[in-house]
Image (cartoon, rainbow, N blue to C red; front, side):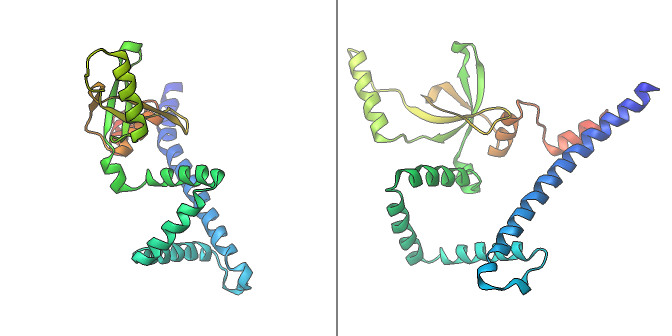
Length: 219
């Protein structure tokens, strides 16, 4: 009797809880955006235009308008000048650059250029780590420093190994490590950026939605 009730309970929990948590996160985000958009009407004394969902509509219209404006070269030129000026302030530069890079992770065009790789760390006893190549052209200062170190440590004039920047996400955490490693020590795998992030952030537990549904129905 216990197993008869426990098995359906676990199966139902595996199906319902992800849906409820996803719905709660999406609803909370929509409410926050809606409240943010409604606040833009307050300085103009347009409270009579506020209704549930009006803030969300305003935010969407603002984003579309900004996107349309940035199709003009002059607007891009002005924004680039302002951006370069703001980058002169250390605090603004640090925060803005981090947020811009974070937003860039959701750019499909940029993600297509990021190769998912397995990093060979067997010599350190760590096996293979899942990572993403974020930069294959390192800054000149890094390349120059490595070239000088290579010339000082070797008698011959062998070329310095080609390094790439690889991001290693941490499981169940918002963070990770960026390492510089030789290109021949990483192995490209046929994974999308989203699949690799899902696998790494959930410590390998995550499954594709269709695979997960099939797995549930088979139990």
